[in-house]
Structure formats: C-alpha cells, structure tokens
Length: 395
Image (tube, rainbow, N blue to C red; front, top):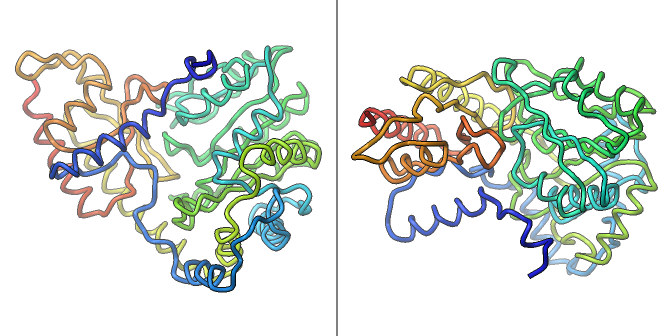
C-alpha cells in the first residue's frame, strides 16, 4: 500500500453510517442523527425527467465538463441567485460536489504548498489537501462567535507558501453562515496575498432566521478570479444518489480540473445531468418546503439540547447540523466505564440510547458531537427523549 493511502484517515462519517446500517440489519432500532443527507425524496418533476432521459436513450457519455445545456443552466442560476456572471467554459460538472473539490485541490495545490482551513471542518478537506502533497493549516473558529471566520487568525496564518483556503458556508458541521463582512475581508486578503479561495456552497439554500447566503465571488472581478465556487444538487434538491456537483471559476483553472477529470471519471452521469437541468429551471416549491421542515427541527433541537444538563449548543443558522458541546460529560462514568472524549460520548449514546451522532474529533472539534436534523421531527423528538434518559444514568 502506498504512503499516500497509509497517510489517509478513513471517513469517520462513512464508517459510522456503515456501522448504523449493520445494527439496523440486526434489528436494532437506531435513530440516525449522523447522516449528512436529506430525508426527503428527490422532487417528482426531477425524477420524471430522469426517467425520460432513460426512455429517450440519453445514456451515453457527455463531454467531460458536462452538457452545454446543463452548464448554461448553471450559468443562469449563478447569475440570478448569486449575482456572478460565468460562461459555460468556466463551468465543470462532476460526479458530486466532492469530486469538484478534489479536482480543484489537485489542480491548484502541490508539494510544499499550504492550504488554510477553518475548523471545525468537514472530514474530507484535510485528506484532500494531504493527497495533493500540501499541508493543511488549521484555523480554529470559536463557539462563542457561532463558529464565524476569524479574519485576524487567518491573517496570522498566511505565509509565502499559502496557496489556497477552503471555506464552507453554510457550514458542515457547525451550521454557521458566514457574514458578508468577513467574506469580503477574506476576499480582499486573497487578492492581496495571491491565494485561491475554494468556496464550498453546497448548503446555500438551507439558511434560517432571515440569514442570506452570500457567494464570496460576487464581491468583485478581482475576488472572482481567485475563487472556485463549488456547489451541487445533493442537499437543496435531495439528489444525493444522483451524484452530481459543479464548479465555477477562472477558465484556466476549470480547464485544468477538466483535464484531471478526463483521466479519472470522464463525464458525470448523463441521466443525472438531464434531470439537473429540470432541478435548476423547474418549480422550486420543494426547496421551500424542505427548508421550512428543517427549520422546525432546528428550533426544536436547539431548545431541547440547551435544556439538557451538561449540554450547551450554540446558535446555527444554516445547513442541517448542530454541534453541541458535550465536554462537561468528560470524566463521568457508567458501570465503571469513564467518558473520556467525544468518541466515548457517541459510543455511549449509540449503545445505551440507540442514537447515532458523529464524534467531534472527525471535524477537529474534540469537545463536540455533530447532530444532523435530516430526520423526521417525530424521530428527533424520540431521539432527544432517549438521549436525556441515557445521560441521566451517568455519574
């Protein structure tokens, strides 16, 4: 096995999902609050076009960067929703947003480069950076600031080796929605110090409390030239299994990402691409419905968690995650088993309450666990009842 693979940590979220599925196959009633996936079905109109693509034989390879029809629809979406003007040659369509991200990292970063990464962060960012031979430079955000970007810390982390920063807003795992002020300052830093911004905006449609998602590339042409916008269809349109994401950026960078993709996966799924055009251009009522349901769950969870002894949870205004702080449980025990860290908390909840949450270590947040509210409100209420009961037996 190569050093490249040996140096890579398996995805903690993927491993936990496999464990939960195994328990369910054994008949254990596990409530999954670990999955970063909508619990809704793909909108009917999108499914209908997918079926039509199959019936009409649209099942061949497309151009590596995606069909012209889809790239044009993406350009229209980015202009209307995000106020950024792109041409189809500045767009790449890939097999999920994850592939867009790794394409961008491999196209921009190499041995000896440094990539800034605000934490807590999604589990795959660090491994992608390492895969490119680059060094992840972790920049901690704070709970008391609702995990907002800390521009001063970012300034202090910039060196002559800084090649890029990866940001994710709305954020997985914290639910933070970065403010216009901090994003604008970050964009100015990127221009001044000549580094790229890889902006993961996959949760853009899931914002609450009157918050507005702002794409950093929209501020100026100079910032746009230093930004690769990453987005997709998995979260907003409940299309996780369709595996379709897209990137927008400078034509030269997109060309490099396309060359990489051409040697790895070629084009994304043709059927998914046709369906994605309908997702972008068809009715949007399903997005509003899903967002409304997520918001109800978010508010309920925040209230329940903050009423629990030894748990505190900061406000989160985006995505479908909360990151409660569970460090007050460290040192408590049950039948001689001492809770030492967030992994122990997650294992305790899985064993005693049959609730699956993700330990914060996976996200560089050792004092927290991540809870996903992409489950029904009924299941979430039951999960909180189970959690409260289980925590009461710790001494």
